[in-house]
Each structure stands twice: as structure tokens, then as C-alpha cells.
Length: 410
Image 1 (cartoon, rainbow, N blue to C red):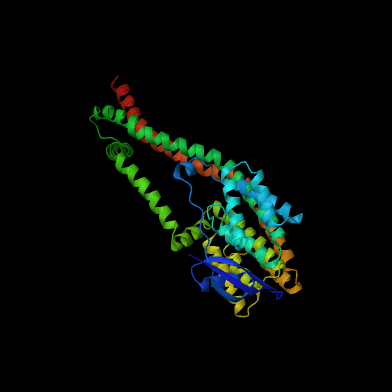
Image 2: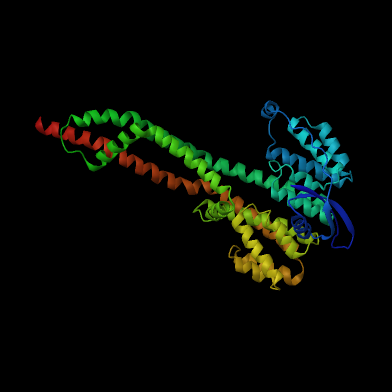
């Protein structure tokens, strides 16, 4: 990747400049146009000598940054920017007051990048494990439009909402996951230890066993004999799925499949659309052209399937179609949201209505998460009941038949 120095004009006609890391000049031009900047000059910049990488032992001992650390950083940057503190001075103050080595190293690298002439978004893009594409795109929009303070505020609110959603989901799934884990452990113990003991008892019957008992005995024998192969198959399958999801086609298919899940799919869709509405409202309020805003917003939704639908909206807008018509063609928005987009487009209050759409989706996401546990419980009860029935028929039915035969002979 090469460092490119650029000069361009924003939507107000002001001449601005900066540094971007990209593969070629076309990628630089696309990033600038997506942020509402018309490039005037793009040339290769002289790359400064990078600091030596830390040793693997130091990296292992350093605690990685969590989402909560990013929330705190966003809140602090918003407060300092609102108070009028320059970015370099704000980063220096945060670096001096931070007690976490990973945060200190991150802030030091951001300061060094800014001293070299890079933009803040470009400096953050050098740390993809800390700043996701949504965060970088929002910072870039704030820099391009002069609304960096508002960008940090929106990012802090978004991260806080994301943390709240994750906490609620974990709380709702805690009981179901414990039940599922107990079921898996119970099946493992029964297949490896209990059923083989019963197999010796059943062999002494010298009689035709029920079908369910024969199935359980065959499954237990297969598990006892091939459990190393089954464990290796499970590990390799998990690794293969993760590798496949890392590809563009796999990510697109996985994100589309997540939206179609019976219980969790609607929650994921509402949270994704709330993120879309928030970021699009900020870009629209900042004066970024709609087509350029769509390019940035498609990278912020964190869902390849919805991102492609937003890119289709952008293509339709570039062809001269209305925003409401392009939104209706995606098939992901509800009728009431489409109506609100149409009203906002006609009245010129699109950013205000987009904020209301985001609040509506966030409330619906909150309500759906609160009812997640009650929605999963019937499914768990059905699974547990089916397993108990299978075990009862397979293990205890032959014993019951033996007891009846013994009573009859007696």
C-alpha cells in the first residue's frame, strides 16, 4: 500500500489537502469523491520510517482494546472537540492520562500519523482491529464536512447502543445457552458411558430390541469408536466456515442468511437499518451529496447484503430516480419508513426524519431483545421433550418390557 498526498476542493469550494494510504490513485479518488471532495492533485508522498514493531511477548502481555475503550475515547474526543481543543493537543492529553498500554500506543501512533500530514480517518485506518469501517467512515465524513465533533458524538451514541444491545442479547441467551450446553454434555456422557453399559444388559435379553433402542446403540457404538474423528471434523468445519465467511462471497451469503433467521433475523435487520439511518442522517445534515453519502453509508452498516442494497440505491439516484423509489426497490424497508423517507424528501427535512427512523428502529430492537428469551424458551422445551422421549423409548422401554415379562412368568 502506498501513501498518497492529495489536494482537492470540498462542497463549499475550499481548497483542502491531506494524505491517504491506498493501493493506487484511483482508490484515492474514489475515497475523496465518497467524502464529497473533488480531487485536484494526487501524487505519491514520501513515506516516513515506521516505528519498529513490538516483540511478540510484549504484544501477548498487552491487553487488547475493547469496545468500551473505544466508547470512552469517542466520548473524550467529543468533549475536547466541543471545547475547541485541537486534535493533536487532545490526543496528547489523552495519551498522558491513559493507563492502558494499548491505548497509549494507539494514541501515539495517531499523533505520529497526524504529524506526517495524514488525516485522522487515514491514521485510524492503520488500526483495523480497533476501528471498524463504520468508525473510519464516520470520522472521514466529519473531517470532510467540518462536523468532526458531531461525528464523535454520533459514534459514542452508536457504540453505547451497540454495547447495550450486546448486553441484552447475552442476558437473553444466557439461560438458553446453559440449557443447550447441559444437553450437549448429557448426550456426550450418555453416548460414551451410559448406553454402552445398557448394551451389555440388553445383550443378555437374547430378544428383539425396539427400533429406537437399536438406533441408540448403533449411535453410541459409532461415537465411542470414532469420537477423535468426529472432534477433528467439528474443528475443521468451524475453521472452514470462518475462512469462508472471510471471503466477499461468503460474507454476503452469511449476512443474507442472518437476516432470514426465524427469531434473530428481524432483530439484526432492525439494528442494521438503525445504523444506516443514523449515519445517513449525519451525512445528509453535513451537506454531503446523496450519492457520495450512499457510498460511505454502505460501508457503515456492517452487513454486506444490506450494503449492496444501499449501493443499488446509490446507482438509482445517480440515474435520476428519487430516494423513496430507490429505497422501495431494495425490499428491506417497512412501508412506514418508506413513507417517512418520501415525506422527508418532499419537505427537505430528510435528516430529521432519518433520525426519527433510527430512533424507531432502536426502540423496536430493544422491544424485540426483551422478548427474545420468551421466544426461545418454547423451542428449547420442545427440543428437551423430544430428547427425553427418545431416551425413554430407547433405554427404558426394553427394561419395562423385561419387567413385564418377568412379572408374567412369576
